[in-house]
Image 1 (cartoon, helix red, strand yellow):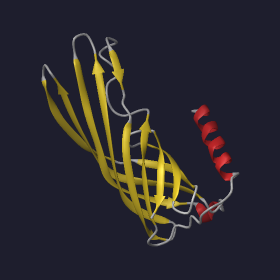
Image 2: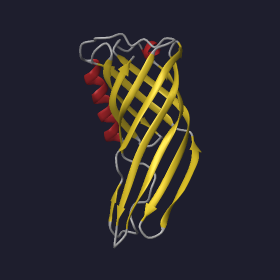
Image 3: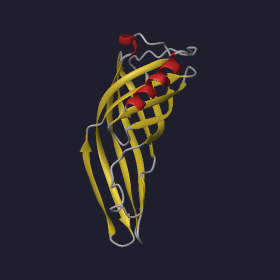
Length: 182
């Protein structure tokens, strides 16, 4: 965890030290779209009792938020991950689909960060759908409600395009990708 915190501080420091291109004020009507990948974590088994390989897969996801009022956004998210397992004569996989609503508070004014940076945190209400399949036993479907939390940051390279990083409890502990201010 110390390495991750150090890495995040380094990334934020590098981003803060570059030239500002855009205003990142979050007001009523501001529209933000994130598209990226999630790495690490995810639900699933760690292998077949130590027999065979395990591929956690990469999460693909998107989120969209609209400014409800100054510094507050609401919107939705959708993520997909495929976990593949290979063992002693057994190959199977699990498809995970995460979707739901989310809201965020943006700390830009409170923390007086540079204009092209957006720091935020929030919570959501989501649904996880899991679909298991294999050649021997068929498959099953399962699902449930979950409450994901997230903490993240955006950096705009131009007036409308930038990058984002988010840590949280949704489909992956770390998400990275591109962000668009519409």
